[in-house]
Length: 69
Image (cartoon, rainbow, N blue to C red; front, side, top):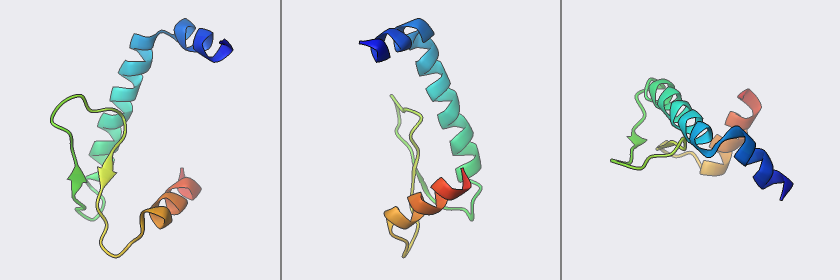
């Protein structure tokens, strides 16, 4: 319950707005990386951004991203 209380104290709307802003920032920066295609939802998009890399396993991408974040 403490986690839910914490989220309620921040405000669900504030969390949603922050998530949307993170998604916008990531779309701007990811789209510029070697012109990689970005998978975009038409509506209801969250801060999560998916993109395609040829010949690279998703686990390898996450491992490198985790080291540079």
